[in-house]
Image (tube, rainbow, N blue to C red):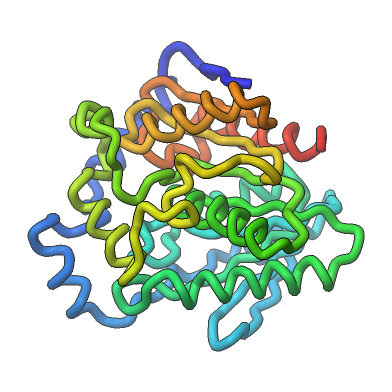
Length: 304
């Protein structure tokens, strides 16, 4: 199912877009990004707000030297376990706005959320994060017999979630029950020229900066590989998906192409597109568009 959620952006979405324009760019200029990231201090995740501890029972674990949070709702808990992978172009740590995403996701689904603060580029390529998330997924599956498990993520995290499902399939592991992809980065190389046409409307991302981030994450491997750039991957064996995407996002063209192909091939996909919505618009949880997104997530999981 492919659905245009709203014909016009809401006032609150326009307000959020104006506010986010005032913030520093999430990535340095393309000509400086490698040098600046190479010199930075070890990246640190944004501290957890008290509101998260009020909503969830929080368990902080060490998994292979990496911090992993388990957030269990204090009320209206469901059978779902969601392994959530945060965005940030694979180079930026967990941002303060991501805590709001997790709160909205927990409220909409009642799921226990597992959040690994995975190793980032350029300090690491994708391999340590890949192995970490595969191991966490197996721990969640074995430790919660009978539970339903979803992989989810925003932006780079959406890429990571889908790539993880592909790796599970290739290794003949038990697949997750669902995938939720928020503004997913489907192709690290951004080969589709339509991204350039959208670029003037995107308040966060540029093609050149993001391509460099993708190269750093891929390391010595080809960033166009299926599990790193899953735009053209074989869909057989993958679980049902829900994809949420704004039109003022350079990642929109690839997300829509993926969804159109999935629907044409009969793969269960729910694709929601939001007119005028900026990249990762669901971080602005007070907007009509974000609230619609989380409500659809809840319905999607409940139907499964």
